[in-house]
Length: 227
Image 1 (cartoon, rainbow, N blue to C red):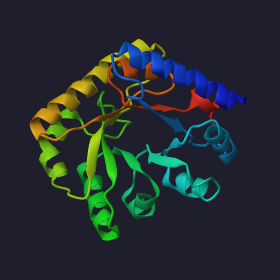
Image 2: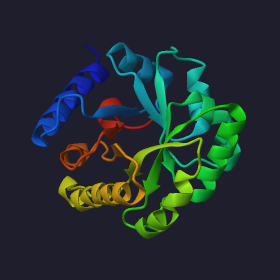
Image 3: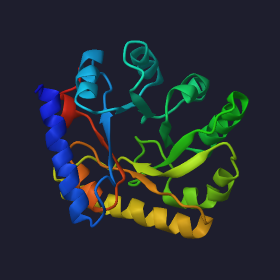
Image 4: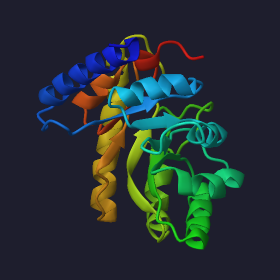
């Protein structure tokens, strides 16, 4: 068994244990293997071990890797999307996880209509309101929710966040709780289900699952240090 395959087995065991602790059924959480800056060979290794869903931060990297890798790989864009890249990426991914503003949501909606697509998206929330990060703050998202739901090409599936890094995973817990509670409030206000919560990375994904994550984005724990 390869090193990547061994790590994937370990991570799936940790995911299953965290799902059980959260009282949810097996299979409630999907693993997004964050493959940014990793060579295609590393993704092939993970794919051979059964991992099909990969996350990339940059559109250019998705497009380049798709030319070199099997068609069975599935892709999420997990980094911020620029308006001039929307047309290139929409047909190539199954979800855009980091819709960070109403303006980019409008651009995606407009171009999706031109391409005849209905993209699945998550709304990125800047849970700590850090100036260095993209995303809606909670009050802006609540204020703009009706306008977002009026974008009829988008399937808004839920929320994602990247909390401040802390070596102690427990310090991420309040941010995960906050995202879940915000999701619940938006469901009550907007009347539409938001089933997906993308939260948790290599160092804190178990805590995220305990607080309701349905997608966890794990890179270093699978592939090792970035290339």
